Amino acid sequence: MRNFSNPILPGFYPDPSICRVNEDYYLVTSSFAYYPGVPIFHSKDLVNWKQIGHVLERSSQLHLEGAEHSGGIYAPTLRYHEGIFYMITTNISGEGNFYVTATRPEGPWSDPIVLEAEGIDPSLFFDEDGRVYYVGTREKPKEVSRYYGDNEIWLQELDIKQGRLIGEKYVLWQGAFNNAVWPEGPHLYKKDEYYYLMIAEGGTGHEHSITIARSKQIIGPYEGNPANPILTHRHLGRHYPIVNVGHGDLVQIQDGTWWMVLLGSRPYGGYYRNLGRETFLVNVIWENGWPIVNEGKGIVEEMSKAPDLPWFEVMPEDACTHFIGSELSDKWISLRGPKEDFCSLGAREGYLRIKLRPESIKELVHPSLICLRQQHQDFIVSTLLEFTPDTINEVAGLVLIQNERYHFRYEYGMQQSDTVIRLIKCEVGKDKLIAESQFSDSPICMKIVGRGQNFNFYYGSDPEQMYELVTGVDASILSTDKAGGFVGTCIGMYASSNGKMSKNYADFGWFEYKGNDK
Image (tube, rainbow, N blue to C red):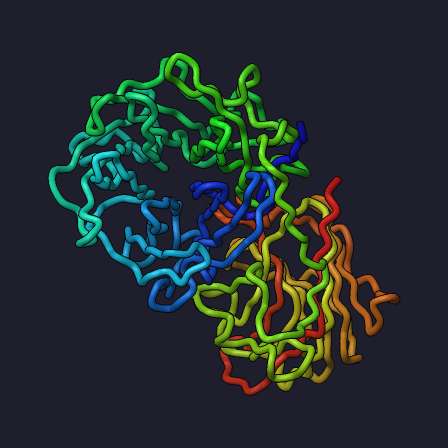
């Protein structure tokens, strides 16, 4: 029996939802204001996953104009029924609740089918009698709501052919406890003679948990599991290596065993969660009609026994991206719009060219930023930049970003008539110059070494001989514990003319990200 290590998807991959099609497994996660939206992965063993694309990759599918970093796409659910894949989600910055369909998980996926449904976190359930149901989260009516986060789980039938909700609405459950806060993320399952409703409670912070109820009728009444919550880490304290576990989805594999994917975080350097909420895997058994998570332990572990499935070989991508070919891999994302609006692989062979545009990452706009998720507590990032600024407004370089108000900009630009390399820390929306040095060579190599919550910044004309700009920079502003919100840190290449029109551009020769967690 093999072991596997958690998380199975490291970095900012929250709210996982999973479905099985014969011997294949597919998984999606939230993407918030990043574009394209809803990354989709494939596996055959639940442990090794390969990204096969994004569900929302066209402007007709994804509208993120003005979305905050933690706005946009929330909590997708992925289901498969009679040859069709369904992904349902909420765009809280756009059309609300909608679903898309595809006959292949790689796509193409349809344009959104928008539903008149209040609330967030929608899920679909296909019953044995052919009827389809929408289940979601909404606020209780004002006259009975007791506090912020006093939600309820509700259900309505969905006419899947017409793409609209029909019939009566039913309140299924209000959570496991009288003072339940943020009951959300519902998923319905049918096992034996019961319908099971699994939800998240406690908010997505340290008190996060998973609870479950059951009924012999889909519309209820639902009885809560006497052993609720079936999973939480809030009782383990803030020094356990995995915290805020919750928002799970269940799947039964070929041998009849059950597994759960769920979100959690790995704090480091104190209770700081720069990586955001990641995707974890845990075993589930059934006992007396209720699920038991990780029998005998009841927690998510860093190392566990793997499912009894054939090993699924996924070739790791090269740490260094050389900009050769016609397309970037699926790991590269942008903010609020397509990267093709500002970057090109064809403008100069072997380089990624990024246009300078007036938009800045300090605004809720579509900036010239292309990035990937930080996936390790310790990492080294480096790039080769060719760029000649024409005015003091023009900058290009590397960014470590949590959101528009909390980030680091490691940029090359002008100071009067000199070219300089500088590090700017943006905290609570205010810029602070951390370090600056004159430098006139081109191209310029830029390197960031992250050791937990300490960052070191280097530069030079030769990657084998770098100069120190500044070391020991506190990186904790990149944690949601300081920055707020629901996303994780992303690292990438950036160019901006900061409010002025420009015809200039920056050429990046390569980009390397090496994670070296133990």
